[in-house]
Image 1 (tube, rainbow, N blue to C red):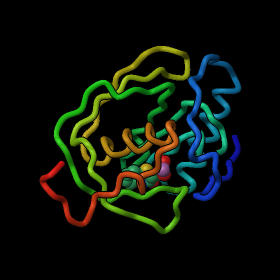
Image 2: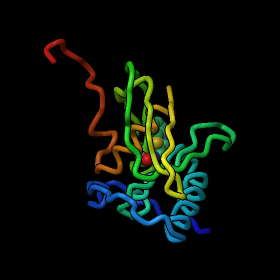
Image 3: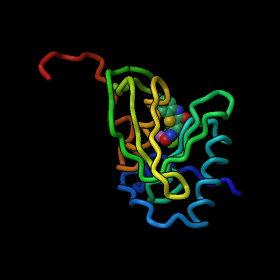
Length: 156
Ligand code: GNR
Ligand code: NI
């Protein structure tokens, strides 16, 4: 296992769309293991492959405080959302920056695991925000694109 370097804002790779994973081989497993180690070392609650310079639809996450909630998501898709929350968000690729975004309160995601089996996950609060944040990364979207305006009008 190895730590990988986190790509920071200004690098155009963060704006690119990641491609689906097609092969569930040792190379993918090494990427996942390295991402896991890098996420924990950086004290992040999630990490998308593009943040270590790999344009594949791969995410690792752990929104627990004791490393008990570790998840691997390959080719993830949001299949259901409910409600909304406006809370603080940060990103390892935008060091020192935080902001309030509007996200669903509850998110259901389907994703493949490292062996290519479909799984379904559900999250609220931070986990729901993290699902959205990481899947956004796979489409070249950063949380700064979704900042809640200081004043919202009712004109849509
Ligand atoms: O570590 C992170 N914290 C965080 C806080 C609120 C919502 C999303 C996140 S994800 C972020 C790590 C990261 O940059 N993942 O892409
Ligand atoms: Ni991020």
